Picture 1 (spheres, rainbow, N blue to C red):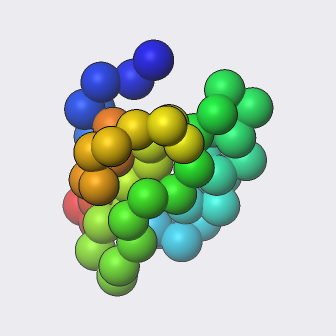
Picture 2: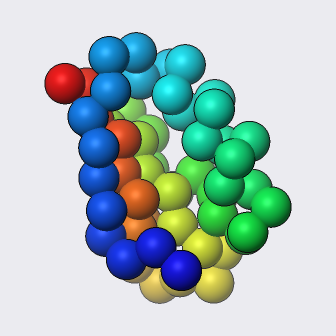
Length: 57
């Protein structure tokens, strides 16, 4: 379980693709996506913001 953790990345789209593949096996999916922030959360999560965030930095 990840609980509200975020990192800044240079290339959001490349990082998004990497983490989609990496976090899928433990049950995380894309929850929020715009040009500045992407977040992932467990499929059963009720938090619309997700638990793991990637931001442009």
